Length: 551
Image (tube, rainbow, N blue to C red; front, side, top):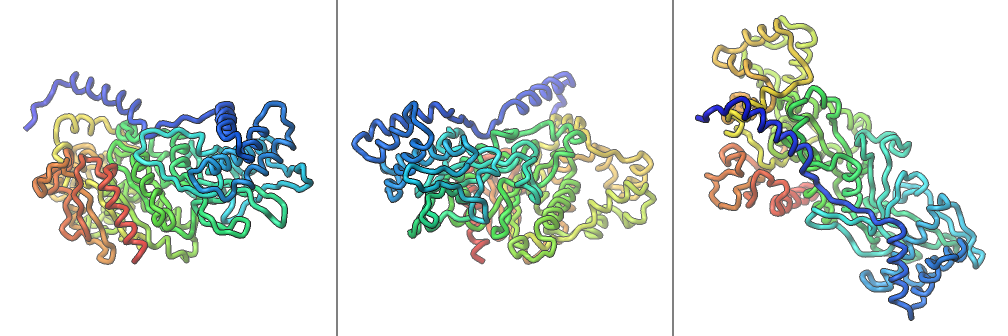
């Protein structure tokens, strides 16, 4: 076995890990161009297309000393002249720049109507199911102003109008009724600004492109220019923007109140939710590369919306699974109290590593199937304090959810990992502080009720690291729980590119631990433990989601 390092060495390594994991691991790099830089680009664009009438109007509009009415009137004319321009052409670029300049000018006057030089009135459309009222937004940022780094692709689409990011802060009245608002970032959404004619009068409208990116403008059908990566990156920049979090592992007692299910964008009743569940020492941001790639697929973004489960990863897996059940119930009660929306009965759970164990428990049956593997006495008959008994029964008594239609496991240690039994893991396990304590009398009662050969399991700290030990009876107990037969599940497993399955490992979880013989499909990808960030792993998830919405 392993030689035990000196305690001072372990403390030093722990301190180093705390510093490195709390300061690094930024998911997305983002820079926002300021207004003066963008005005300079507009002037350069106009100057390089000097013989063009629309370019001349743009140049005139962005010139110094131009009155508001003249400026806005020239921009409206420039946009109208280039409305049918081919995406990627100089004319199209002029159209988008003129639109962005027009939005900026109207934003400065709180989007109030403007009487143009020709006597017509330019107005701004209000909000609806398919449009966004810019007056309700806390921030409105042109997507072209965002310089995004560290993502493999930028999910964009050429078309009419100018793409924008709209952001609502957590306290925004617009978010009333949304159950999963992120505490710092709020919620963001992709919209596209388009100038159209409304009963002969010019009107600026912001289309919600996540709802519909194919609209009729001035009598002709057109695809809208969209940028789906920009809202994702902008939202991240307003939050933690880190994929790893050792504090949530060690100080579970201080981070439990942050746990919950969160939305990336406003709830859409016409789309199926995909719930992403991160793993040990991780955060929802770890799913950003996958979500960004999924947004690049038109069919996926038309049929799905993405939710994220955040939890302190020091919790025992059963307790985390109980919290996820509570959160999914809360969302359903808020969004669909009559349980009439079929899309909310087809949810897909996607779990990475320990998150896969949490996801799998949502389609298994506990109760006697669980407690009979450890003791002969039903838990409700144990002489425990009411608080301990309530907590124990909440964790043990569960059935398969009726609203989960499919589960995808990424690098999931169904049978544990050898890394969880070495001295470093043991040291960290003893640092974990749980958000609850069990009275000594209750602990003695529970241990005495356990079968003799299992009592030693409950001497060590009952947290996630102990749970993940290779060939742990705790994990074996999960595998023994009945799975809902009508719910298909899939495995995506890394082999570090060695092609040596079934003798492979992703460096953390060996194949023998992540393999499930009854999985609907199993995909081996050339990755380490981060199979959920691997392009082939994400492509397999895309395939599975496409299959799910086609059934």
